[in-house]
Image (cartoon, rainbow, N blue to C red; front, side, top):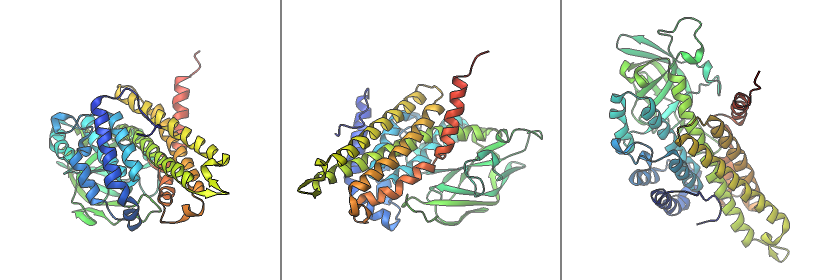
Amino acid sequence: MARLAQTEGLTDIQREILSTVRDFVDKEILPVATELEHKDEYPTQIVEGLKELGVFGLMIPEEYGGLGESLLTYALTVEEIARGWMSVSGIINTHFIVAYMLKQHGTQEQKDHFLPRMAAGEIRGAFSMSEPALGSDVSAISSKGVRDGEEYVLNGQKMWLTNGGSSTLVAVLCRTDEGHPEGTAPHKSMTTFLVEKEPGFGEVRPGLTIPGKIEKMGYKGVDTTELIMQDLRIPANRVLGGETGRGFYHMMDGVEVGRVNVAARGCGVAQRAFELGVDYAQQRHTFGKPIAKHQAIQFKLAEMATKVEAAHAMMVNAARKKDSGQRNDLEAGMAKYLASEYCKEVVEDAFRIHGGYGFSKEYEIERLYREAPMLLIGEGTAEIQKMIIGRRLLEEYRIQG
C-alpha cells in the first residue's frame, strides 16, 4: 500500500472492501483501460465484475439487498476505481445518485420497487438536470410536466446524461406549475420524475428518444447523451416522493453527494498520475542519471504528492460530514473545487515529467491528460463551486447587529 492518501479510523469491513476493489482495479481495469478508452468502448466486463463485487449496492440499505455502507466507504471506493479508469467511476456515480435520491426521498412503494434491483445492478440509474441552453443555471430549465388524469405528460430536451444509453431508470427534472400560484419561485415549481426505459439509442419508449453518444475529448467508454421527451406519459406514482414541487431539493441533495464523488474521482486520477510520474522519473535517464535525481523533478514530485494528500483529506472530511447527518454543501464544494483543480495540475506535472512520451498514445498519461478537464466542469463548474463556497461563508460569518 502506498504512503499517500491513507485514511485513518476505517473499520475492518471498510479496509476489506477497499482492498478488494484495489485488487480488482489492478487486475481487471488498469491492464485494459487505455485500449478500451481509445476505442471508446463500453467496459461491459468491468461493469459485470463490479456488479459481482456488490459495488452497485454499496450505499443501498441492507433491507433492500445492498451493503448499507457509508458515503465515506463509497467515496474511497470511487477513488480507487478512478485511479484505474475515471469513466468506470462515472458509470457508478449516476446510478448511485439516483439510488441515494430514492433512499432519501422516495415513497415506500418506489423504494420497494427499485432499490433491490438497483442494488443487484439489474436496474441502472442516470439523472438529468441540464439542458442545451442553460448549463449550471438549473432554475432556468424549460422541460415541462403537465398533469393529465393519473399521468403526467413530459416535453423537453435534456443534455449531458452520463449513462443516457445504458441506463434503465432516469431521474428527470421538469417544471410543473400544477398547484403552484403564479409568481412562485422557479426552484419551488420543479419535480423529479422517475422514468423507466429500455437501454440503447433511438426511441427507447414511446415519447422518449436517446439520439446517440456525444463525441467527447476524454471521459470515453461511458455514454454521454441527450434525452428528448415528446408527449412522454409517466404515471403519477412515478413522481419522486409522491409530491410535486420538491424536485430542486431532491436534485441538490443528490448533487451534494455527487460533488463528493467528483472530488474522489479527482483524488483517484491525481494518485494515478503521481504513480506514473514518480515511476517514470526513476526509469528515465538524462545527463548520466535518473531524472528523479534532478532537483527540478524532485520539486515537481513534492508539489504533486502534497496536492494528492491535501485533496484526499478534504474529500474524506466532506464525506464524513455528510455521514454524520450535518449539512456539507460548503465542505463538498471546497473538496470538489480543490480536488479537480489539483488533479489537473498533478496530471500536467506528470505529463511534463514524461517529456515527449507524454504526448504519445502509447503512454497512459496521455489518457489522463484528456480525462482531467471533465472534473473541472462536472457536477457544477469551478466557478459555481466558488459561488456556493462564498455564499455559505458569508452565511457562517455574517456580521451581527
